[in-house]
Image 1: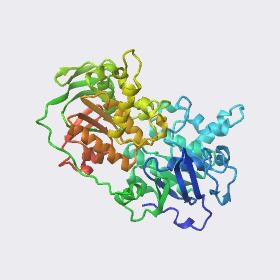
Image 2: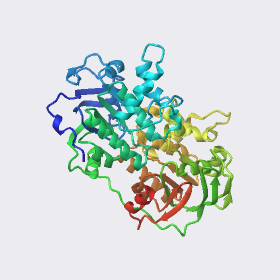
Image 3: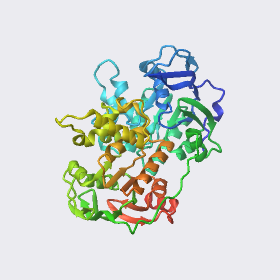
Image 4: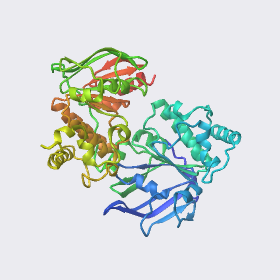
Length: 505
């Protein structure tokens, strides 16, 4: 367990905030929060979605302005003129979950963009940029093809590019927002090694993650926020995941196996020899009414590709699909919806939600025809009744249904995606990594909904790369590797460690 800042307690803090408050529309996103990070420390900022983590980061980086009375010190200097430009000049950088890189530019161009181009257009010195990028990658103890296009790299290497780019601007304090959300275990371990390297070089790192195990592994202290207020600052020595969960949520979050034998129930989905060239092959399994079937494997194993074929985003090149005993050929998403298949995608921001539109519009978008009145216009009453029902049924925390979907936390956005698809009254619900970027308390709430849906008779395919998630919430588990099903497990007898060893072998 890390305690990298133990010898830096007497040094000026890399960052110290006191009495930070921020209000949006009468709601306090932050309420008199204090927060500090030491030079060379790996510090975790923890809390459920909506607790104020992102707001705090945006205040530190000058995106938002704190209310009167806040005091902000950076490397021992009190800051009065805070802006994104000023904060970058002070040595603060943020690596957001979406990385904010240029996919069609090379590795070297991405790393050197800010330094070589800057705010004033000027000729780019490509040779110097290449040398500087190479030196920065070497400083991290790594090797990358500097001429490779960013979109040709796996997500783990793009993370490295984002870190190198931050260091090129002489960042001495780096915020990392959910840096491991899309990484495999091996890739996560490599990223944590890089974080330790940065710490040893004196760079302070604020690590934001919902994976509590890695929080305790990498950080020396953790600051916990709940409902915009500071719960406290805790050393990670001796801290447990269950205790940290309690601090974040204010309640105990239990994990237990909920698997049941559904072999006597009627088949809902039957897949036989399903394949798609270069993606997956010879996939066969059945999901019965009221059954949750887990599908686990590394990113790239073919899990999401299989889901895309079932929902009609792509078409299989071999095999057969039957739904409630009837052959199904989903040539489009519309065909799949009409057949009774619903899909909650892994990337809810770009595939699951329409960001500029309201909460109400997002919930109702899949069933607009059902909401038409006699003259063919959308009935406000029908729409309002539908939206009110699903907000209540899924306990979505909203200010007003007409607010933008972006005003909701990750967990509540995911509930809206669920509502949108459940409104279609599906026979089969596909959940692709439904808790990516969702905090521990919201995860428990989402899976309570999933179990209630299964109890009502809905067949569910749960896709995940987290072993404990599928073992706790599925009735059966299939392991997918290199596009094929390579194992089946009963959560009531399977051991998490054994399954992890097979997956990450």
